[in-house]
Amino acid sequence: MAYQQGSFPIVEKKQLTEDVFSFLVRCPEVAAQSEAGQFVHIRVEGFSLRRPISICEVDRDAGTLRLVMQVRGKGTDALAAQKEGDFLDMLAPLGHGFRIPEEGRILVVGGGIGVPPLLQAAKESRGADAVLGFRSAGQVILAEDYAAVCGDVQIATDDGSLGRKGTVVPIVAEKLAAERYAAVLACGPTRMLEAVATAAREAGVPCQVSMEERMGCGIGACLVCACKTRKADGSEDFSHVCKDGPVFDAERVFFKEEGRN
Amino acid sequence: MADLSVKIAGVTMKNPMIAASGTVGFGQEYGALFPISTLGGISTKGTTLHRRPGNPPPRIAETPAGLLNSVGLQNPGADAFLAEELPRLKQEDLVVIANLAGSTLEEYVAVVEKVSDSDVDMIELNISCPNVKAGGAAFGVSAACAAEVTAAVRKVCKKPLIIKLSPNVSDIAEIARAVEAAGADAISLINTLLGMRIDIRTRRPILRNNVGGLSGPAVFPVAVRMVWQASRAVKIPVIGMGGISSAEDAVEMMLAGASAFQIGSALFADPTCPVKILEDLNRYLDEQGIASVTELTGMVNPY
Image (tube, rainbow over all chains, first blue to last red; front, side, top):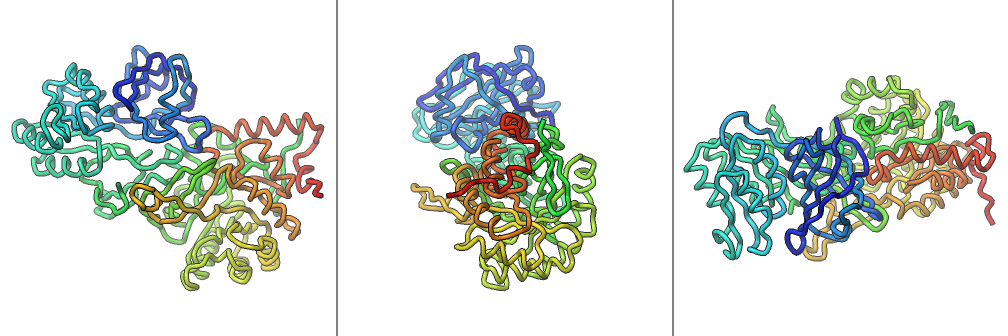
């Protein structure tokens, strides 16, 4: 458990879309410990709960983390109002990230605000292709960042305003049919994750998914961010997204847990 | 520096600050952020006789100045607690309070009997659980039920017994008196207040369990009031909790009648707050020229 709590300066802020912001935070000790797919838990003044934000990029040499977050409510709205030079109170790095295969290309599949957490994994892989899905062209983020580190980047939008019309799922199926990947890594809406996991299973490719759940402490003490999973012995249990995840082997996850959005 | 030590039901704690059950697990995760022995005591995650999977998610919802939770007592069971968690905790310099729960009178008695034989320092009984055999109303919402479970557990409990009271009652003093008469060595309060939130787009409750327990600063004045009422009704020590997030809150709780206090939800926003609360408490006592923190207990001067 190499996490710590501290206040760290925002050294760069960019607005990517109407409601998505990118922050570069200088936190050398945290960056040194951070892995692709982990998250940081940020305090927002006046709110009882921290906001979990996934790590988009880690620059261990520069001692920075890049965080890309979407405004979803009053808490994240307050976070998005932070400026360069402001300090973020972060508890980080948290959770278990992606296990990147030592050999072979990977396919990363992101949907919406599930796109950022895969970038570092793509960078650290032995080669990656990406399939990224968004609602429409105006919501597209990080396409150039992925293009810089991936062989092939395919974009799907729900309304067809950029890339292929529809979800990422048909593209994922085509990619899996065309190339033998060592792993599929996915993050996005639960329904997308389930479809991607199914496609990967049918193609015989191991799949890791990054899950999201309403979270409390962020470190595995309060047990609120439950995710129903299958243990190695086949029995069912509630794992916790903050400590056991956020990344799980797709085969372990019950996607259809009632009550999940 | 003032003397911070307190004695609750014969057990001495080096300071009156206890981590509240359900917020700190068994201490390991927070131990990576601050020395867990900063605490005078820890009330461990509510444990039942057998392992419980807990409720489906979502289990938490933020509220103005607080939060709702419905974890559903997910815990590894008493045997796993005794074998895997307790030995590690007992190496720390703090009082270990086993928080125990059940769904039936028999289950309460069985889990207390089992854990009572270990080297936990105290037992805190969560009586806010639904009584399965009495239609699901919590044990702690009627004086008769609260006294019945206290008396039954008392017979097998070899450790100091703290009864943790539910605030979802109309007369907290009556319940406090009932559990005192049934053999409680101390009481702790308040457990969470029952609450609910609804997503106005989906028209579904945010919590999968529909309702959950409210905690955080929003409940603090309610907790102070109930600690005041309960402490005036009984002679046994009272452990106060509910929305404490600063040394000032802790002092207020002690003035209301608490001999010790618990910190819970405040840890989520500020995971190292116990360190600061202890420093600030020390400073307050010195500034006020108070030699022992015990001098605060019940010293409110009411109109």
